[in-house]
Image (cartoon, rainbow, N blue to C red; front, side, top):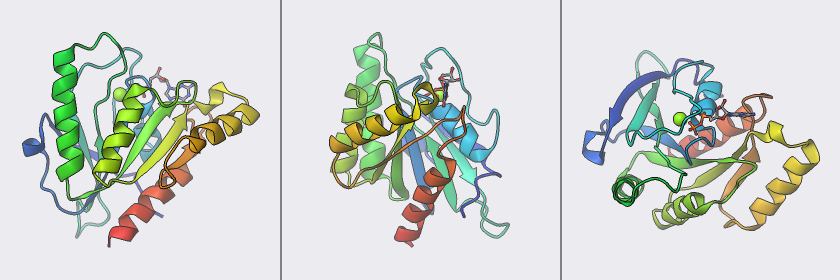
Length: 202
Ligand SMILES: Nc1nc2c(ncn2[C@@H]2O[C@H](COP(=O)(O)OP(=O)(O)O)[C@@H](O)[C@H]2O)c(=O)[nH]1
Ligand SMILES: [Mg+2]
């Protein structure tokens, strides 16, 4: 199984031209602010502070790259990418427009991008932001896997019924799972999905 334990921060980029060279493979994670993206990255990499988590919505528009060394010979064959998201109506139009341009550019042109993990709070799935990401990913032919995170907020029955309800609204190609960093649910399934994206491309 793909091991993400030794993941290290690589660099931040404000636009495509500042991204690390477009070789190897990478998987991007995206979600509305506060959805639980940073917590998910920390959980799957087994690190407490790799991606910053906070209760206040971040304003930073930087794309953060993390390198996952697979061996000494091949120090950065795989990368995790933290794509900035937003989710609050208060975000100014200009910032939204710049963000759209950046993300769209990244999804359309990044050759090494193997898939997008879209993180949603299980209590607030498929918001406008998420629909936009699904739409762009489909246009750019990037496979999407959805995490319904904070699943611990629901009882098991409601987790499963929400999963089915959301699944029914998606294109068949989109995969989806429940996830929780608090109850430690869903890590293996997510890493399996990433592994299969990488394997397909090889
Ligand atoms: N109950 C619960 N809270 C979570 C979970 N994941 C994240 N959170 C909380 O949700 C808030 C936002 O998380 P964060 O990872 O910073 O979200 P981001 O803005 O998407 O990066 C923080 O207060 C986290 O502690 C989860 O699985 N369960
Ligand atoms: Mg974050």
